Length: 111
Length: 112
Image 1 (cartoon, chains in turn blue, yellow):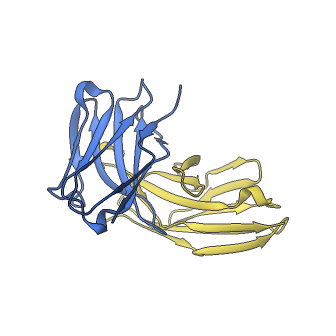
Image 2: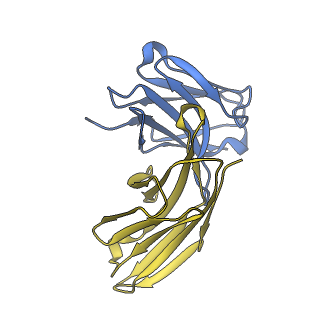
């Protein structure tokens, strides 16, 4: 069990560029979640996968955001045409059903 | 809509000075209440899950309790290494995928 791995740890991008983050969950966990956390706030739910199926998306997830989990293994979160308001920590978590394990997150800064 | 409110926002303690953090919640049906610890620049680290009113759990200097409306995280004789942000979250029955709703956290600083 190597935990939940997220890459990259940090990403600085110019406004308008596209970015993609990767999450590798704990291998036997069938559920995968993406959360977003801004400074001084708690994490906010973005989306949820059970195996390869994306079963729920928050209204926070605008049309510029897309997430995939091909073959039910790793997941990617893409943000198109980034805006300064997208600057945040993007957290991935996985779960076997009860209890979450979070990764260390990807810190996105949009300049 | 599920809601979680944590207080205080920030707390400064001297080493050895015990205190409590509060988490008030509103949820349609509580499936579980979670406490996490988060260090700067890192993801939340799981501490406890509580499922029903009256339940208590302990780990080293931390003890979590639960009532029908709130949870407390008691810190006994804290040490500087207990400095972190403590997050409370609820999980509701009927919530698709068991999403968590988090509070804004309490930033704890323990001075030596």
